[in-house]
Image (cartoon, rainbow over all chains, first blue to last red; front, top):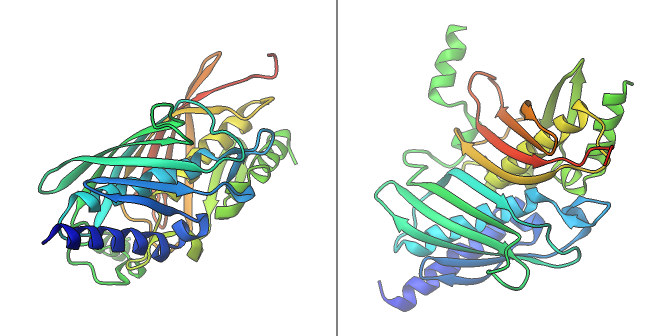
Length: 167
Length: 139
């Protein structure tokens, strides 16, 4: 795949993940940059995303969602072919409250991809990634939807169906 | 309503993001269950569909904060220091529940573990461990 094709594909995945994911859309996520295993996303400051009404500081949970979403896009930006991915674990350190009234950015870098797992580091900040609001470390499973058809989650998983039948 | 009930209702009602994802909580004695009804706007993967991992993380983090507010009166919301989330199963288009266990409350820091499940409590879909900075009413 040519470099231009890769760039187009990464941009397409980012736009699909922001527009096609209802939660990302509800929060107004926007991808500012994507490519070379890096993604930079923005969540605009709005009253609905506040966590502490006394201070007007954005909810930790919104930062969690942004870091998760940005990390996922960084994984896609590290791959040459689209594959389904799922977060395995996500660890977040909150260094300081975000500045009230400001948009929050997240920069995620997928620094290692193995056959089954991708590893990502990410930071959330307003202006400067070196002065972060929060830092994250995440692991993603690759090809997570293998064998699952669209709408698979409307049915209980196999193990649970059997357990239910026995009960 | 008990004091703990009032504190819980006030606490969750005051967090716009908790309202935004549609989270609520119920108390049975001192046992709290947080409830996240399914709605379209909490979906992350529309193909399966699956609840956004970030929403599940946020839900469990707010469950931990709510449990701390139930446990004792706090002048201000505790501040999250760090959280570690484990994703065990994909969040299906169903109601999600969570319960938090306060492992330790020190003078300044609390350690809380949370588990989230859907149809079967024995089959959790995600777990969270976190440290929270407390500001007690005495300060």
